[in-house]
Length: 107
Picture 1 (cartoon, rainbow, N blue to C red):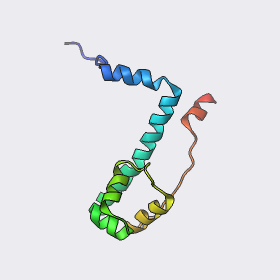
Picture 2 (cartoon, rainbow, N blue to C red):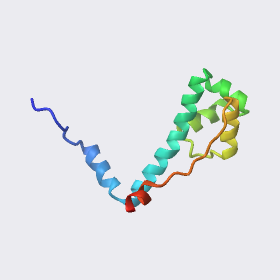
Picture 3 (cartoon, one colour):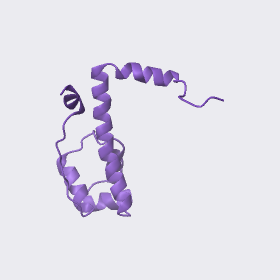
């Protein structure tokens, strides 16, 4: 049997078509960025060997609220909340401004 590229699935073709639309691409990229924040919080919490309940208590919030942040941080995640979570894990929040890929590609 020949090895190589897999044939695209219906979902793959649909996704590629959707990503050709600049508005849809921007929305997907924004959502992925938001999910990375939640994933990073969960990863750091695990490295600190804290349960969601333990971290939530340290940060002065409920465990269900922390769970929502880890799963979908774009919902009501403020800088103040990030700072409280970071301090609860003996960390500091660092914000970086990086060039956008779209702007870099135009140059």
